[in-house]
Length: 264
Image 1 (cartoon, helix red, strand yellow):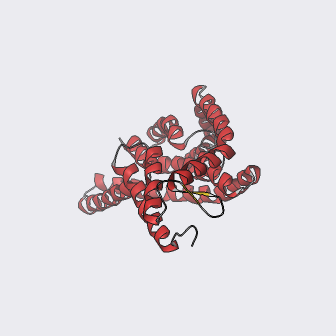
Image 2 (cartoon, rainbow, N blue to C red; image 1 turned 90 degrees about the horizontal axis):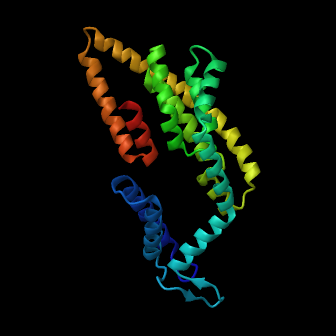
């Protein structure tokens, strides 16, 4: 026990706080920052921390408000400057059209019948300086145009693009998530970037292969719909749609925006 706190109560508070955070982000229009603050306060209250700051015998200040402000300040102090420069670089990347130019360049490099790989690599690179949802809004029209031109499934192209975007956004600084982890645990940012790259490459390859697989399945289903055997395929499509809807309901907010934009 630290400061009279019970580890079991803090664990229960953490679980409830995470559930509350997910509900607030997915089911309400509350801003994610406010949702994080509210969840942190709920965790502290359930865990038994005092609302008002108190002094421990060791001289340290103890309380919910102090924990939130100190934790936020320490994290921002260690990664704030890097995030600021990352946002500036991402905005330049977005406004100048460099993201679209990169996509077209990779399409030429990879050649015909390698569109999934080209979009995955584009997303992989673009999402490092740009937030993944912004990168998707910029690049989704290219995926749609490729689908119309090549008759390939927009599902496979979109899945490959989203995989590249989300993987590096989650693993490679200067995006805020990885930088936050580096700041909290005192990890060298340069080493984190290298390790993130190493981990992201096989994940992107696997997701690209899966994108090709689901693309072929969707094309096969559409082909059957045009023939006599429509009922079975329609039932499978409805079941898949229900599963996808369920996943979207419980997935992080960016996935919802990706899917709604891609398939509308």
